Amino acid sequence: MTFDREYFNLGYLDSLSYKDTFIHRLDPRVKLIATLAFIIAVVSFPKYEVSGLIPFFLFPVLLFSLGDIPPGFIMKKVALMSAFALFIGIFNPLLDRQPMYCLYGFTISGGWISFLSIMLKCLLTITSALILIATTSFPGLCHALQRLGMPEIFISQLLFLYRYIFVLTEEAMKVVRARDMRSFGNKGLGVKVFISLAGSLFLRTMERAETIYQAMLSRGFTDKLHAMRPYRFKGSDAAFLAIAFIVLYIFRMHDIVGTAGRFSTGLF
Image (tube, rainbow, N blue to C red; front, side, top):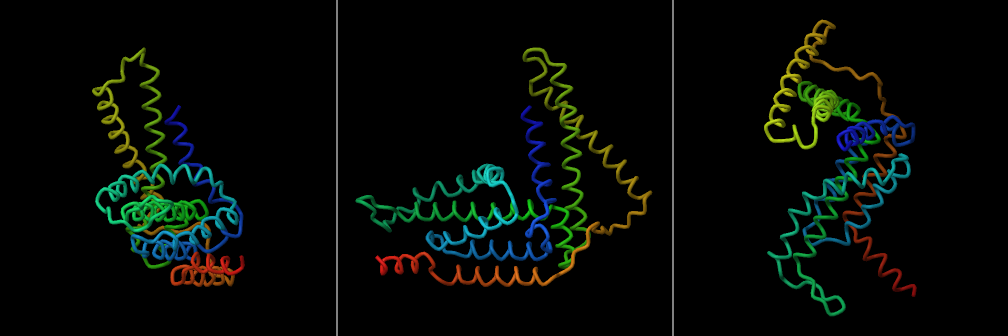
């Protein structure tokens, strides 16, 4: 049932985008631009910066709250994708052993600082990207790219790729279930059977693609995609984008954590 569960999770992320909250009602272009600005601000920090990244966690936390997005579901996806960043950064402590800090008698090298910085950047960027999809939907993002001037052929390929991932997954589920029903014990689970199943799935995919393309042509498809839900740039969109840029600029150009630390030290 693992295959079925992953298929459900794939569709669940898309279903979250159809909620009716303030974040969901924003223009997709605004959310896309704000998220790109957030990602650029995060990755622009130097490799030894850690404290400067902490205030940026306010952005996904607010979106979780305002968009009514379940944090547990998103964080499971983030943990899975963070394995790539973990593999990249885990070698930093071995390559960069220059001492940078001494904490309670323990010397912390630059490699551990850069490793932590990579993991924080990965956590922030992936979380923001998943929240963007969960509050906008993939077709909404493609529509935003289209309105921002991206080529039509590129948008068409993205939409078809996303749409027919579900179709391909359904075909794969049929093949896997048929294999399981015909398997007794460990029979039918070898490499040869897997290769045969992959070939059968490929042929089914080609046949389905040809059938779908012919159906689209018969219905007047002209390589141009139209959005079913029109979006208009409103005052709330402009306000959200302006606030996002101002806050990101402050977080990037000023040491918020250091200032808060000095302020609290002065108080107590």
